[in-house]
Length: 132
Image (tube, rainbow, N blue to C red; front, side, top):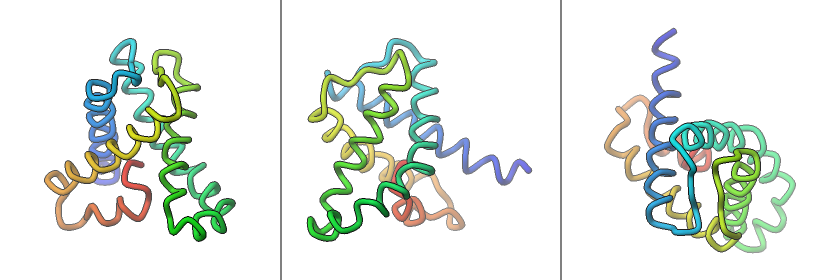
């Protein structure tokens, strides 16, 4: 049982860390307290696991036409959705969400390179949106 829980907790910690770093890099992204940061990381993982595949399917033609660039917009929308759901998490606008989502995805990927072992490669995370 613990073997199944460890990757989840590790990924949750990485997402929390990247959100915390992003809140210090981007002035328009703020958390009121630690609990809102932790809840936001959890909800971001759930939103990316449940809603993101549906959005990818629905926007597939647009994603193909833009050669995948629309995926960045979907990532920003997921971040704004979580911000709307968590009361202590605020994003000043779409532009902040857009660039913060890119930053979070790249930073979580880089951290995953150093933290994950051979069985749970970061490429598996890249297939699921880098920051599930």
